[in-house]
Amino acid sequence: MTANDVSTQTHQRWEQLLRYRYIELVVLWEGKLTTRHLCETFSIGRQQANKDLTNYRRALNHGSLEYDAVAKCYAPSDNFKPVLTQGLASEYLQLAAQQSDVQQILGQLPVAATSVEVVSAPSRELPADLLRPIIRAMTEGRRIDVDYVSLNNPDREGRIIVPHTLVWTGYRWHVRAWCEKNKDYRDFVLSRFRGEADLMDISDRNATGDKDWQHIVTLEIEPDARLTPQQQEVVANDFNMTDSKLYLTVRAKLAPYLLQLLNVNTGRLHDDPKAQQLILTNHRAVNDWLI
Image (cartoon, rainbow, N blue to C red; front, side, top):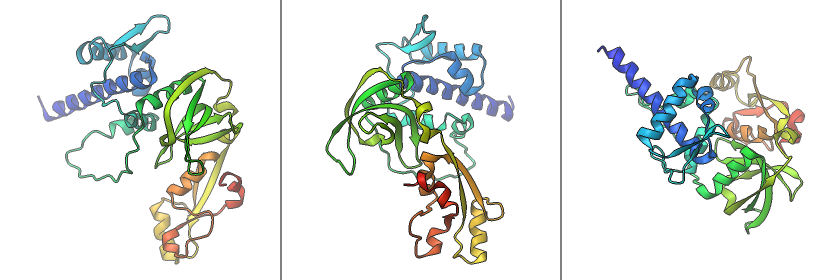
């Protein structure tokens, strides 16, 4: 067997392990899984997807999944326990953040010849009993009764919300939801939910009706004009700008989070332009979304 054969087999085993881990995470947190999930996420055929599910059920986690012939999906059995994951909410949230690009998942494979260090924000682990019903409410379009705290109101306050999307801001997780108290769609920080969440009935509130969420804006970014031309060129190169301009298209309600990641101050400029580096040049056009 050649070195290339060994490398190919190793890569295939890693891909298969990732699919098993995906099966476990989706079943554990969303409560159901279809072969279509696997086919679309990993670009595999239905036969391979069925094989993966069978192997996971029999070889890795015996008796863990049950097939619902009516719903045509696999669901966790009463004695289901994770074997490839720790059952932590952060594991599912990481998958949710990466699921749009399978190559990002495969990119987690160790590369022996490369030395890499990653600076990570502190973990904000969430109680499984809290996250799971929120996810279920999202997938089933249901109202949910939760307790929530904020800096303005640190005491628990009951809220009935209808969540529609999980949002990773680059620093922490939010859930975008209709809030019955405020009669509006709001962002709720996941780590600020408290206690247990109670699932309620189906709601007609969803992402389609969230006009602020559906609105798309373009942010125009340039190097801070107070920098010298040479310094501006350095900054422009850092961000792959064309003609010293960067155009970023984003959902309007996510614009403040993106600007925060870029350290773009939309209020008073930092006294030191080297600390600011980037500025928003179409402030007036997007100002309504930055408040």
